[in-house]
Length: 423
Image (cartoon, rainbow, N blue to C red; front, top):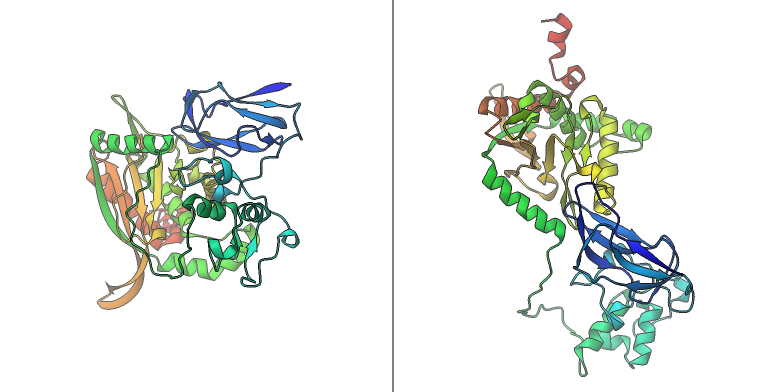
C-alpha cells in the first residue's frame, strides 16, 4: 500500500512553503513518526513527519516551492524491512555545507552505537574511535586512519568521504599552520531569511524610525538576584534572569504610555489594552520572535518559565506560527553577544522595540562622589509617525526607574510611598 505525505498548513495566511532539507534518501526505509524533512515558510521552519513505516519515494527536491497540501513524497508500507533503514540524524549534522543531504558516501549517516561495538583504532592512534560506517568505507577503499587525519576522538563517514573525494595522492596536513585559501561557499537563502530581508528593508523605507538612549544602574536587580536566586530556583525550577525584570518593567511602562504599545493600520491608530511582548531569539535559521501574552498580569517566575519554553522551541524549530504572532512590543538583548550599544530595528507592525546591551562596571557620579556601578545602555527605537519624542523618552525613563527600583514593579511602576499616602 502506498500512502501520500502532504505539506501541512503552517498557518492560515501561508499558502506556499519550500523544501528546506531531506533527512532521508530516496528509497530509504523510514519509521513511523520519524522526522524525514524540514519545510520552511516565510515565518518558521517546521518538520515533516512520516505517518507510517515503509520505503520512501521523494517527489520534490530541496529548494522547491510547493503549495500547502501538495504531495512531496510517498511511502510504500509493503516494504518495511527489505532495505537499509534511514538513520536518525543528529541535529547538528542534518545537512551538509550546502544545506542538503548529498548522495553516495556523502549521504551515509552514522548511526550511534554503544561504545563496545565501535571497532578499536590501531595502535598508533589509541585514542581515536571509528564508527562502523566509517570503518567499512575505509576497509573498502584500503585507507588507514593515518591517511585521513590524526588526533580526532572520532571519525565519521564525512571525514572518510573528504579523503576519497580529494583523489589519489592525498596527504593529510601534518602541521597546524593555516594555509591560504581562496574558496567561496554559496548557499541559497532560506525562505525565512529572504522574508526577513524584505521586512528589514521595508521598515527602513516605510517608517520614520528614530532611536533614543538611556543608561540603567543594574545594582538593585543584581543584588536581588544574588540574594534570592537559590530560593527562587528551588521553588520554581528555573533561574531568575534579567529578561523577566525588563519584560515586567516594559509591561508597566506600556500601560502608562499606550502610544508606544500602539500600531498604525491604514489611517487608524490601534491601541491594545494588553501587553504582548516579543522576545527576540537568535536561531540557526535566523532571528525569531516568540511572543508572551498578557505580560502585564504575569509574575516574574511565569515570565522566566515562558521565555525559556519558547526559546527552546524556537532554537529547535518546533515553534508554531501562533506563538510568534500578534506581539505589541519587542525586546532584543544584544548584550549576551557583547554589544555595548546598538540601534534595534522595528518589528512591524509594532511601533517600538527595546534594545538591551552588556553590563559593564563604569564610574558614575553620585551625590558628588565618583563610584563604580554595573551599568547597561538601553536603546528604544520607535516610529516617529505615531510616537512623539516626549512619550519615547518618558517611556524609556519609566523602564529605567523600574529596573533601578524593582520593588516599584509590585505597585504598577509607581512609588510605594506615594501609593501608601494616596498622593
